[in-house]
Image (tube, rainbow, N blue to C red; front, side, top):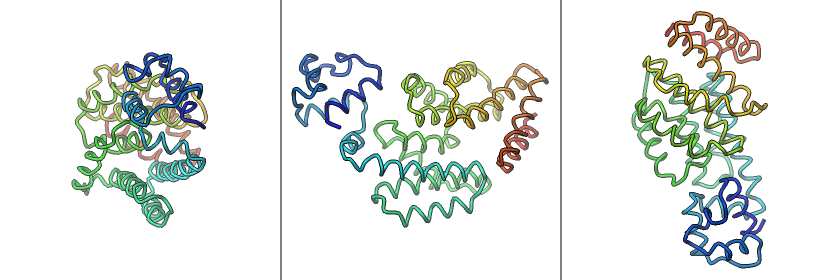
Length: 282
């Protein structure tokens, strides 16, 4: 993939015209020929262009490397293992994955980030013994990453409980508006995950203001195998809010059905957590 090919990929992914993407950094007609590989772009203009369009420079350069996709796939596979262990409420497995990270051949920078992510999952499963130092470190790291790439999404999702509900609503709404047209499965799954957290916190605080905005956004994302589980969990909390906010007791039967289906599918520990949540806030 050439620089021009990759720039075009990002521009189309952001749903921008040539003029919108090039801004005042480079002439539109000249930029058009860069995408067609008819003209070259200076390194200074390239970096300015990436920053202007909130594209991570390291990620962009990495994608020009033929080994980049395989490396990223390994990172994402490890993160998927983390998610699975978290939803199985398996702290021992998360500790094993943490050890796998330390023994991996990832770069030191990625090892630090993977360790921080898995530590965040472990922290979420340890509500009775909070590690404030770790929580502050994760919050700090979230805002040190310049753009909301998949890493920042995951870190933020893990650290949402460390922010106030109002702050989370502001951040999540901004993310939805920025990425609502992104068809990446990773981005869609990340957005659904953080919206689920918003619903959980709203139930805990009995604050259902503007919930329709978040629920409607997730409902408009087409269901596919990659996000099927997350959509199920979203439905559980949507029905539970319907019960809490509108006193609709019939919504509880759908909550119970979802819990049963999750248990049958082999996630009995997570199903038990949902049941305990329902019983606590019912």
